[in-house]
Image 1 (cartoon, one colour):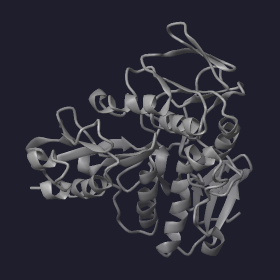
Image 2 (tube, helix red, strand yellow; image 1 turned 90 degrees about the vertical axis):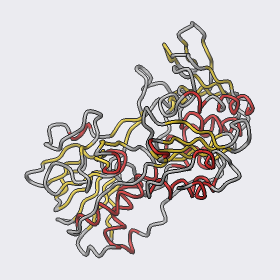
Image 3 (cartoon, rainbow, N blue to C red; image 1 turned 30 degrees about the vertical axis):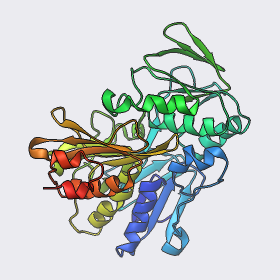
Image 4 (cartoon, helix red, strand yellow; image 1 turned 180 degrees about the horizontal axis):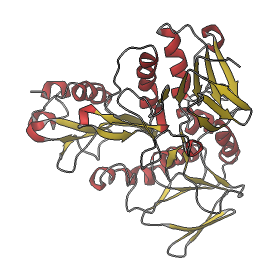
Length: 400
C-alpha cells in the first residue's frame, strides 16, 4: 500500500474516473483506489439491462489502471477517518493519505425485516444483478416495490424475459418523487402495453419470503421481490470524523467539491454541492452523468487549479422500449409546455420560466430534442413558446 499521495475511497464510476483524471492532468504521485467490492471497477447502468438479461457477464470500465499506475486495493471497506492524522481506516488496516477523495456512492433503501429473506433483492451491485438474473432466466414471477427508475427498468427486463411482473407503488403515479403527475400519466400505458401490472396508491405493509402484502390486504406472490424505493449516500462510516454532512446524509462539499476537512474531497452519489446556476441551491444528484463530470473538478483542485462543479443536472433511463431523458431543474412556478402528443411514440415536455427561459425538459425518444435541449439549458436560453410547442420545428430554432 502506498505511503502517501491521493487515496480514492470508492471504486465505482466517480472514484475510478477521478483516478484516471488525475493522471490525465499530470499528477505524478501515488494514486490508490480503495473499493469494498472485489470486482474491478465497473459501470452500473448495465446492471438493470444487459447483466440482468444475461447478455453480458461484466461491465468493466475501459480504464487500464495498471498502465496509469493506479494501485487497486479491492475488497477493503472504509470504517472510519482520522482527519488530523490523514488516515483512512479500513477493515484491512489503516491507509495514510495526502489527499483523500470520498467516492463511496449510495446504498439502496431497504424495507424493515427483509435483510435475511433470500427472495428479496435490491439492485445496486454486480453481485445483486447476478443473484436476480436466474429468476428472469427461468421466467419466474417478479414484484417490484417502487415504480421509480429502477423499478421500471427491472420490470422492462423481466417482461423481456417472459416473467409475470407486478409493480406496486405507494404514490398515485409512476415516478411520483421525480416528475409531476401530468407528465407521468402517459407512462401508465407503457406498463400495460408491456404486459406488466402497475398498482399505484398501494403502500406495502409487509414483505415475506415470496410475497408482498399491500395496505388493502392484497397479497401478491412472487419468485423475486425487487425493492427499488430509493437510495441514500453511503456515508454512515464518516460519523464522528469531523467531515460535515448535510441533512440528507451527503458529504457537504463546496462548489469545488472540497469537503470540510483539510485535504478531503467528495464526488458522485455521496456528495452534495451548491449549484451556482441555481442560486447556490445544494444539490444531491444520484445519476451517472454527475459521477462522470465531478472527477475533472476534483482532479483540478488537487493539482491546485480552480474549478467549479456546476453542471446542468441530467439523467436518463431505458424502459419498455423507450429512451427517457430529463435535464435541468424545475421550479414550482415554471409552466409546462407539451412538444408533441404524449400519445405518440416520441414527445417532449418543456418547463419554461419567466420570459420563456428553458428550465428543464423530459424527452421521450426524441434524441434531437435531447441534444439541442441540453445545449440550450447550458447557455440559459429563452424559447418562443409557440415555436417550441411545434415538434416539427427544431428546438434550437425556437430560441429567441
